[in-house]
Amino acid sequence: MCRDFGDRSFYRGFKRFMVTATIVVGIAVFASVGSAAPPEGVVVTKFGSVLAENHAHHQSYVYFADRVKELTKGKLIINVYPNSQLGNEREYVEFLQTGQIEFARVASAVLGSFIPQFQVFDIPYLFKEKQQMFKAADGELGKVLMKALADKLQIKGLGFFDDGTRCLFNSKRPIYTPADFKGLKVRTMENKLMIQTFNMLGAAATPLPFSELYSALQQGVVDAGEAPVPSYWAMKFNEVAKYYSYTDTFIAPAIPMVSLKWYNAQPKEFQQAIDQAAKDMIVKERQLMADQDKTATEDLKKKGALFNHVKDKNAFVKVVEPIHKEYETKLGKALLDLARNPK
Image 1 (tube, rainbow, N blue to C red):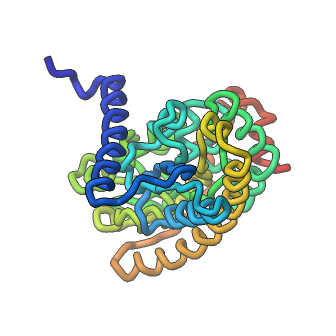
Image 2: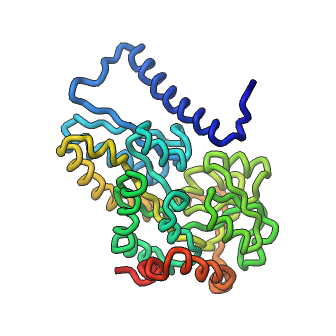
Image 3: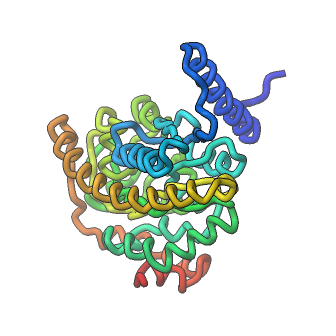
């Protein structure tokens, strides 16, 4: 008897099988064209990402892989798999724990369902601007979160990426005030706080995997999504949702990560190379994101995307104020203060 694909546990098991099958097929094809297996002493690993090859994050992973290869003199190879080839971001967290992949990039919003402290980044309008978020992530707040990631999930965070300022794009109309959200079906991550935020603003939050968003917009399953400009551009969402409004709803990072169990089993030479390459990657990524934000906006405007700023951001802040009070109780005022007043 066939199992229902709505059965989440079955689906995840099936996905794990498909990831393994993808790797096995890749090895078989590699061998079939007469290529030799990796030389003795060379370790080959996988880096999973949901984003497209033209995104600044993907360029950063490739830079990281090249640096690791250089620093280890070719002994450690990292193959990057973009476009959700190895699954979605929630699955990456599980795969890092089970050893099916070694590296991945995951949005902080995904980690909140595993480690509640990461929900600090999901609180709408907590950060006034991106530099405040960087200071918090690179400071005491980041240290607290990275320790929790290692202790609870056995995953080592490699730093905090600039994941842009998350704004709303949709196929219906520009957003100027909270009232403009009314009736919009907005795709969100499977994240309680994000769902709560958009429902509070008057939209109908609809959790979907990122890989399904383009077709969902195309088919009218949802009217809107939320993402930084580089993701809106890289995934070509402008083709199915031409309105991009600078709502600045969330300012949150993404985290490139490595399986701590795998990392701890590697020689010191590999660990040092990964750590150094990760530091270099964070610097590189933030510059790439800043550059791509500008070039992507210019390209999108040429292609007919319509950008607008909101009339009064304080009106949005006022609507979601109850969330701030609720999460001061849930996460603790001390944690939120590390974000509000970075150290």
